Amino acid sequence: MTDAESRPPGGESPPGAPAWQTAVTSLLDARPEYVPERPEVMTALVQYPPGDPGAPPHRHSGPVFGYMLEGEMLFELEGEPERVLRAGDAFWEPGGDVIHYQDGNNRQDIWSRFVVVMLMVPGRPMLTLVDEDELAARRHLRVPRSG
Image (cartoon, rainbow, N blue to C red; front, side, top):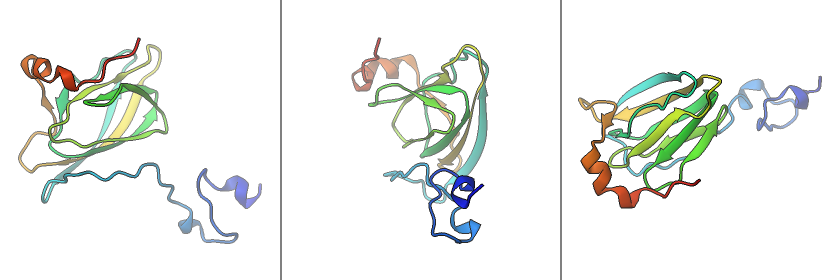
């Protein structure tokens, strides 16, 4: 096996470079408009069984960064069309006032597993559910669903 064949995807480096120089591959670049001052940070593993709808509509007090480990997630944020994320995909959400509508398992035959790193306002919950009245009042901000 050549050095190029053994190198992880995206790990381009000069020939003979030490492994530590190619060990990191950028999966996502984001510029959150808001990061809480002195945030509490939580890293969590989320695991949904086949067909599980996931968390109800909610929001986070700060930005959330995630990575799909396996399966598929139906992902939808306020102001964006729903999309399917698959194993190997990175994602993020800005938190704050933005509603996270969907994070459920998109498959009926396999588990969905992903890791998230959440930056939270100290003393506030990591996830706050959105009630039906607020969903109705903000309906105009949700991208029409396809299909």
